[in-house]
Length: 331
Image (cartoon, rainbow, N blue to C red; front, side):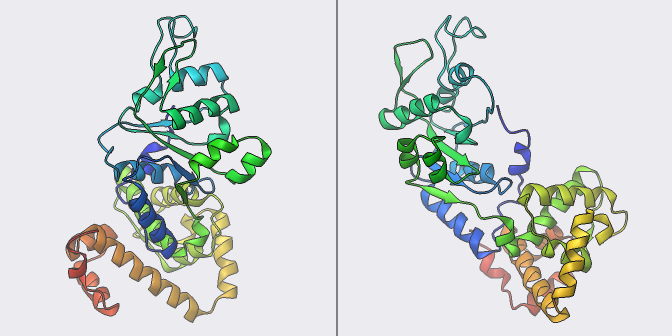
């Protein structure tokens, strides 16, 4: 069963890596992607773990193979096992003729399990056997099946604590932790907030058939003051609201949810105008660098991505001492 919000994680605007923390994540992903070893992705809910899993796959030699996403909370163990590992004829009532499982569907590709603690310990033991032996038996069968699928697993919990609590097979944890990617929460990646907000805002405006508005200074202040407990999902929803309710050319605090406006008011009392301007300058520079990276140094294209004029782009490039030519080969 694929995540219903899967399209969100396939956004062409991602990845955004303005912050040092996310740059380190993407650098690590590029290093580990060529391996066939299993990958464990950790991080709070909403941080983009499905996106990271897909990126691992897309940067690997298996990129042309299937990327199969699995999430089955609160379903029976027999049903889950028949879906993952397949079933022989008569072993599973829903499939009297038998069927292959999703691991076989992911042959020469990757299988992504969104929350490992949702799966029973019995299922985890079969996954461990697959990692160790490269084989398993279909439900009700005795013949070994040997698909070639890379396993990518995620959890929103501390995997070590899951193992201590008996919710994660300790041996499976040890096998998975060899290559671990930790996705930091949005509150630790402040430089990514505005590039992501801008990307989400433009996407939702385009989907609604509207001209994308720009983020006003007070809306920016509200976005930066908020703690983002819902991470990227929460930011995406806030920008969807702004894209739909903003009738002018600029997003203002009244276009944002009330709790964001309260955060902006609190932040304004704590930060000086100079501090806010310095933060805005840093984020604006990060936005421009990200747009130039995605446009491979084409200033006109970068200006279009940001929704500003080419003249303003030229002024900002000179203001921040950015050399567009350095982005022409891409990354």
